[in-house]
Image (cartoon, rainbow, N blue to C red; front, side, top):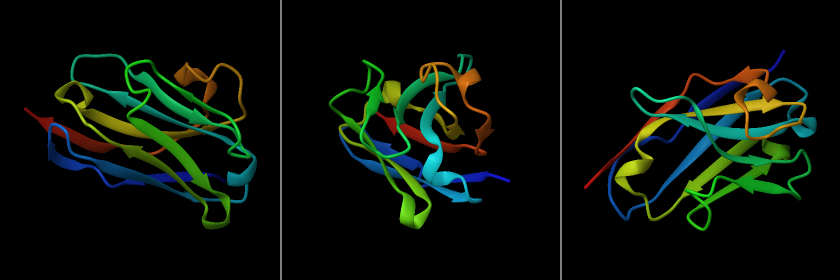
Length: 123
């Protein structure tokens, strides 16, 4: 019922910005917790950010806090991840996810996933 498609990734230099988008198909977007995770080569899939269904509550990994901002526009069925001051360590495939809530830091809390979009940050 719920499908997610990420876009907006690309190749940037350190210090630059990108905005990722997550387009949702299905009727449950407004009631789902939305999250962003990332996976670098040879690494596990790690939590980046999450946002409650209303948008009132957000969570961030320590590594991105102050640089990344998660948001959502339920009327447009879209979630976003604004990434500023990008670092080479941010290089990864970024995945959008949707779920009912729980432990926002764990991929297992999210039942729906996008295909991922590549973000590469050069030195």
